[in-house]
Amino acid sequence: MKASDLTKRQQAVLKFIRTFVQSEGRSPTLAEIAKGVGSSAVSTIHKHVQHLMDKGFLVRSHGKGNNLVVATGAEEEPSSARPGRSDARPEGTPIVRIFPFCGDVAAGSPILPESRALPIEVPNSIHRQRDELFVLRVRGDSMIDDAILDGDLVVLQRKGEYRNGDRVVALIDREEVTLKEFRRDAKGVWLIPHNPALQPRCYPPQLIDIQGVLVGVMRSC
Image 1: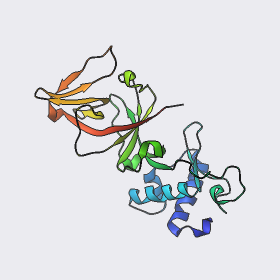
Image 2: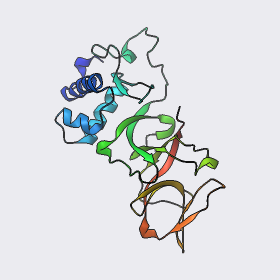
Image 3: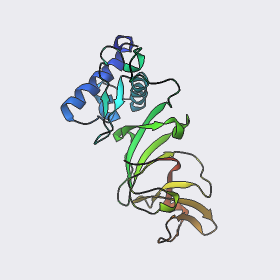
Image 4: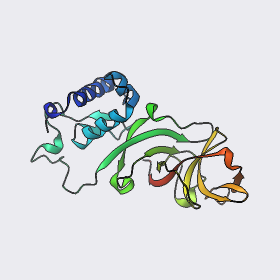
């Protein structure tokens, strides 16, 4: 596919990202892209960015900031579409999708709304075509026995119901965000750390708002 084969809106998104990265030195948020191309639907912009990544027009720069950048030569034809190129994506390579990165799991750090979130890649081995996913960065060591370390990126799914034993991100009393094992009994909602130095705590159900259930972990480099 050539750039000329993109829709006008996709071309506008690509152009805006290129200009923004060159001028600001970082990736724009989905909301900034939407504003820049005159759209009020962040979810639609999310789909356009995903399409541009799938077609090779956008790539992730894995250096500092993990920026979303325009692929070299994207003005003409994405590398994945050019025969004979060593950097073409081989057949069968796991497909990545992008989901919103909404900040840190830490006390005093509220989860960012998706309108302010940054797009981040999640590999097929984790997303498995699930929807309603988002990504957070872990701060702390309360889940080290689950091999979830400080700085890791956790992928979560918003669901209507949560079961005992689920690893969840919970908002406590609208103030503290934490990653713990979820259990509920007659006493209330238990948030259980997986670190022998820490103790489980029980809360009245009305103080707990489950934000999502853990579906995968991406090790921070």
